[in-house]
Length: 359
Image (cartoon, rainbow, N blue to C red):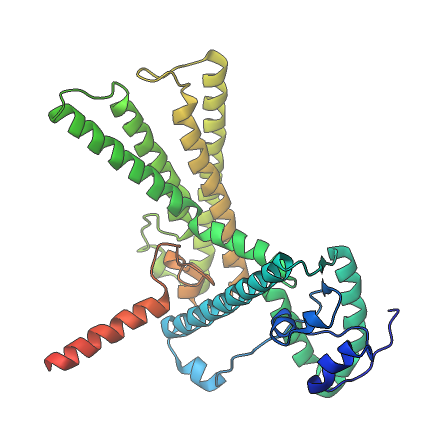
């Protein structure tokens, strides 16, 4: 790799850099800043070649003894802790890099292609040692943890963003349209009954917002298998047959959603071609039809997600296979819902108050 490496005691590292006994060193960004290596180095290169993992452990017999809901709760807490850890690490690194840049210290963000070449060489050189000393299962577990974290920080942020959108997209749209509708209707009522005036377009726009809110819920309900369904007939059959029936229903629902999407695309095309306009506002009818197209499109996407989930979890118990309300997704908490830790803190507070009252 074009360098000669040597081992230096951590306590002697700063002095070795200062006296030019060594030309550089590798460590975490936080260590680089807290140890003030920037006083002895000319620049800092972000190679991001080290993945430091902190594993949490649980007794397998204990985990297997828990109910599915309790096990899912523990896994949700663990995932929240992992996400929060990465969030704190990102925040800390960004703050340090900003302070270095503000001070005029050169920071090099190494190109991703170079980092990949570096990673391949490092992995090839240490893979054999890890397997020889720790076993192939340990190596595979570490690589799986690395991939789960996003591999590199850039991919981690992208994966986190996509996961956030997967959970929150429709919910945020529903809240947004509902809030705008309530605001508009409230203003309209105040203007009409107090000031004896109002917007001529207020009622029609409020109806449009209601339509957009309703169609935005299509994907939200589909993702969590929340649509109304009757399970009496299905529950008469064995579990494997029930799973097959559920998959068949999802396939039929996907066909229906695709048909609805095709119909809405045709409506949008016709409205644009013939320039159909709304009554109270100078808008094309696509202001209405696009809501339907969005709703059916998200139903298609969510139906595909559900089918992928069920094929991957065919061997699981029926509750996890059905995944009603999305309870078994890795992260199913929308952004404006309280976190698990907040719920626990509230429960502890209420319990303490009850104890004080002697109840």
